[in-house]
Image (cartoon, each protein chain N blue to C red):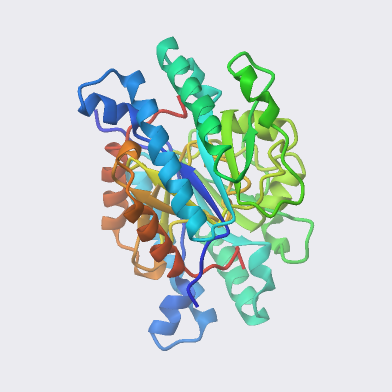
Length: 200
Length: 200
């Protein structure tokens, strides 16, 4: 049997490094991450993946220079605009109570009950401390089977600590704007060969 | 500057696979993990590492066949006996309220305040659910900089979800009983080349 993950977490890291390598300002990397996000979503949908959760930006990220904060916040808003037309259930999860949360995403913060559509979550102004210290606020997001991270780092960087307790982590050296469908295929192939024990 | 982790998490996986590969019963793998644990501790101490946390066994692990449960529980008790003579501050962290917690380790469950010694923690009958659902019971254990896992899996398997939010993960394919000092050296060398941002 070819084992497929039900829910994949996506850490789309490397936008700023990509921008620098391509002679742009760091802030300009984020919008080059939009099309990859759409391509990944469509590929995952075609493969029958039930749920995707993208790591948009965090409370900590908002300490960066303002032009970067504006750029990644805009990119997340555009991402939701794009994704909502893809026939999926979109849900935005994050700290809506701080100024960094974009008002225009408020309508997307309620998770739809019972849906036959693929679910796509985006963490926006998310913080593990915000999540955990207030009694696991992200609890509507279910367990994640596979986390795929671009940009070469082998770490979670605060991504949903409880949902990832049993996740397998697959690291891709390429930077996120250089996403290729082959990355997802390689991750799924690797995942199918992991022995899942859920801590048992 | 050669960046060194202050606190290393150790996931000593692969004891049962090692036993099977060496023609033994699975349960007999655990005691072959004791000497590696001592060698690692001494090597880390020599390198000036301030704190080590070993993933002993979990509440979930206790669902395994009884002979295995007895074997890994005994191995943890022996590990504490060995470690306490190494001039370090030993602390055992886990669910002391369930029958799987060995009574003889109760004297080690209080973390020493102010100590100049290296600290060595062992998770015994630990469970992330026990830890988190009761209000972060492991909070005395500080943030972990580097997690090293033996046995090839790239996952945390419930290992201290909050302390590991910003950890870098280094995976070693060799099984834990085949520990070599070179593994630690390679992990530290790799770690020194990671860019630590703590989510910023």
